[in-house]
Image (tube, rainbow, N blue to C red; front, side, top):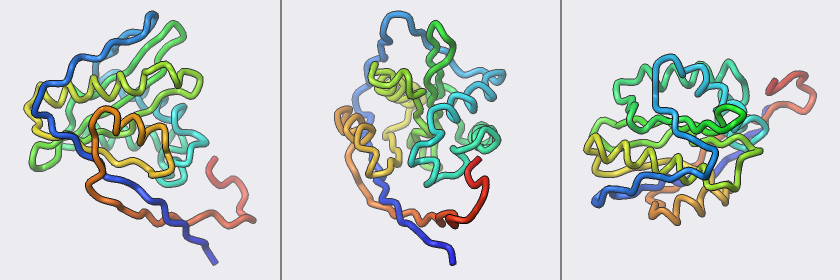
Length: 187
């Protein structure tokens, strides 16, 4: 019998009444704007950012390279894909952070899969990615931005709150846990 675990998630929103300030990066890092040729690189950075993370249990596609490629392709093909809110951060060793943006049916900007490779966390890159996406949403006239975050991801929840995001809804996502006797699960 499969066990099911429920993950608490917050839908957080932020009005974009005042244009956000462009994000500054620490010395040695630079912005890489969206380009079609970067789809696979976004997927790879997404995988490196989420592998072994609780969110890869909540969204299994984040736990494999193939899943991240499929997810990135699906985001890119959505009618509301927002290149202005889709960025990579590059450093001396290559790209280390990614974010994608989508606009929903009423024009709100949706943050998708903000990820920073573990070795580069704590440098303010996640906050910079978030702010850069918000600037992109404001540039295309989105009146509001939203995202969903797993409630136990306390560093992310704190960062979103510090920028002004507020929880508007609590959601629960049911996830079937792998049977303990399963071999190769999540690989």
